Image (cartoon, rainbow, N blue to C red; front, side, top):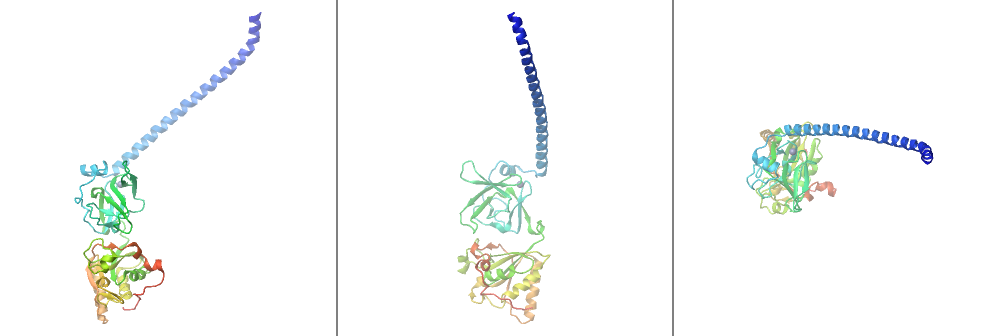
Length: 346
Ligand SMILES: [Zn+2]
């Protein structure tokens, strides 16, 4: 009886248990099916993603230029070229430096300076172009091309070379130089004027239409990286010079040169008002034969009007940016220049 009873008693319970078990098994199976499906889907998408990644890598590789063994040693394996051997070490032409491997724009020649270390040195990069990563030893900071990861060199801070206190020490073989004339930024042009204290010249030229930027610096002498003190002590031969970047579509070199002749007195020799010394001489440093012709033509025009023009006309050389506190002097300080005013001469 007992078993019967038990059977009878258990039978419904077993059925319930069986039902539960069946339901549970179905649930497990369903979950397993779902898992398998998810796994298959995931595997599929991983494979697809992998393919896409590979395709992307292949596409990127095909976009990269082929490297010589020396380039590969530096760019891929983070080597260093021997100092004083790179083609851009003693090289100061105007233009843009691109990544040798992927062609991304990295540095402007306007930020290049001679650190005397044997490698091209820049105190700034094109915004966002260069990535900084601390070396494993924690001693130095590596710089790489932000677009493709090519090794460029190292960056050093607080050495006091320039106002920006930064030195990107870059291997020449990691770079490709594009002269300003053929650069993509052919929509801009550059002019160099010296006409007494650069604060005043900068102040007036910055207000001219079509002018993008004006910076104060030194040109025409023989000392590299001169300081304001160096130039003031008449030992360098440099003139206080401004670099004007402008849009030829909105103004012209001639228009700016005419303005330059009207905001300083070109008849004063080696001085400008109260500022006396060859660093305050009137000078125009031309970049092209076309600029030279324009300058000579305007000087003839002024001489024809009776002005005894003393302006020096010389080919442009390296522009050494002045210390930070000389830049935008009147904008920061307020007021108007003591040494310059506009006089109609043409
Ligand atoms: Zn690159």
